[in-house]
Length: 379
Image (cartoon, rainbow, N blue to C red; front, side, top):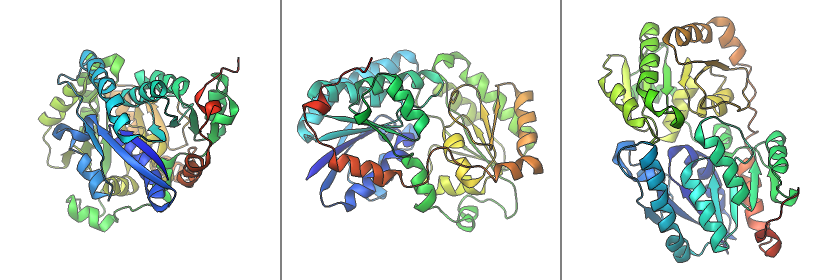
């Protein structure tokens, strides 16, 4: 039996890993280990390790790593703690392959540890572009990883141009999309009752994270978004940001924002989040979910700032800067009948919902030998 160790530190990449682990759990030739760290273990971010366990998975290792402060310095120090702990954890688990997803620093530390320990590293979302420091981290992971899973041919070609050997690259689609096609999504009637959302009323779903290079402006940026949404004055669900540098400023602004029709949550169950997105009139902020998930539901998205810069986008997305007046204009356009009709025709550029099984087939069958472990450049 081949064992796959999945490292996860945030709700974002858990959405990628979860459908793959479900497929692994059904396969008699595969087993998994979950290493939970960072935001999953912190009450500030909803203690989402409990959500992993509620989904029916066993968490095999908990690695506490996070320094308080949520600035660039504490981010770097926290990653150092994780890297210090991972060799011991991996030596204890003895996986055949380490599975990583996305573009966060915790994933980079997993790739560094795996490379030095001689454990093959498989990376989901290889070759994509994004703004923020995350985009640079993603490509650093590519240079360390042994197996690359790309959502489409454009991303796979970018990995090739980085000098990666072709036999390592697999075009699979994005597993995040799989659950939009066949996963559990909470019905609208249940959500309206649970979150006290009156029938027929519009809904705004908002997630805005800090941009690491713009840490000092994070509070001002979310303030502009808040005041723009006040003009729209629709029922709004805000989900708190991740733990990157600048997140404390955003959380402080959100905590002070009190309106009868605004609800704040540190985290939401995945099936509820998808259900709320499916019924939302508009998705607002800078989360990748507005780019990668909202198209599958045909939901208009107002994407604020540069955090998702470079990602392929469907016709449901309007890009805008941080100024309140610009966001208001974008909201007016996004909720207009013409744009709503346009968004409803969106085709998701990140896959067709069958990525997880493609990835599992590779994890199960790829030969682990010196050819895989000893990387060579093609240029």
